[in-house]
Length: 381
Image (tube, rainbow, N blue to C red; front, side, top):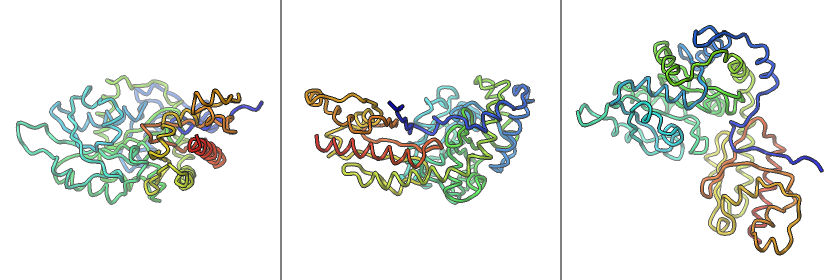
């Protein structure tokens, strides 16, 4: 019996290092980064800073830590406030670290479907000089915007935010976890997308394929302060050049292929939108993220959680008629595609498929076929 094919679309964080990354790790020159003398980390930091048009960079273990450090550097007193979207990653998925660890107050604005927010609303949320209020110091953006389906923020919009911030003496931080996807989609240099920001975090371990790490960039004074905070948070690493070596390969070799992920997501979006009972906002599929939602006619027969289980299930055993009656998903999973396991995430009846360099066009076809079969059998049940 042939081994099952596992198609892991849970996230672009599941990628494994490429062969060239493994070779770079083996040959990396190392030092002690807390002392600032790991040459491979220094090379990565300088390379990323130059790529994003900033003075300096700092290698950190994760994007969450990068964002936390950035906010705490800009909001350096405990009466500080940051304005950010109500659907942004910092607000929803980073455990409220800016409040629990830094005492920074969040003031949210409504995230629009394209990942932006209305600048008039932003301006209305900027605090005046009043002893009753915290002090507004920072505006945070996210590009691409995860919860909005990987939407891409343009340089024009970011510049408008930057102009508004400058008007009130505020700073701008960009959570650029998938910034390179945005740059590739728009066909511009990434520095153009962040020129109005005082700090940017760039994740290396998503579509760029590194196993670990993000780089936080800004001017030299910002990075000096960020380095102290990294140490305080336990993020000071020693011979971490073995990880930075992968990041260098990510920037040199992995950016150019991101359009393949975008094409795969667009293909799947078009095909899935044709499946009865599934709704896809085609306009939102701009990069490597694909969200689709079960309509009530389908979700009444199979929930989002059941669909995810059916997609993932590998079962070569045939089910009896009695078993099928007891378990309505039994006939769905026993579909002729049992050697294919499709892994993904779900929130309610909204599923997410994420493209990355392990997902080929053939994988997309196989995943689509399994999804179509499961939905067809659900309608027939």
